[in-house]
Length: 125
View 1 (spheres, rainbow, N blue to C red):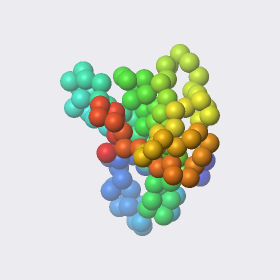
View 2: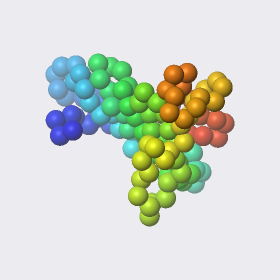
View 3: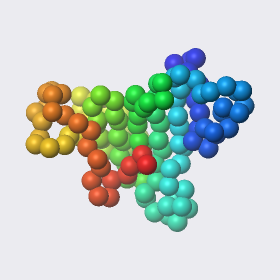
């Protein structure tokens, strides 16, 4: 995605002023360290957040919680995987689908909605 600008959370507001116009229709929004206080305090509740934004709406995103070795990926569906730095990233087919309500059968997207993380899981907020 060479022509898609990358904007950090910290520079989001300044981007409009620098460019002299509104945000681009499509961009990647990055929060390289969400949970700075937790990180500085040595706790494990910090994340790296990346989202593809189109027309002001998040289209796809990923949350990586390095201290917890967890990777969350979402678009039309949401997935979670335990990851280790020394191992290659898993494909979506090997990641655990996150669902709400009665357990949807794997491969059945109908009734599947992204799950709000369980207590203790890291969020993008």
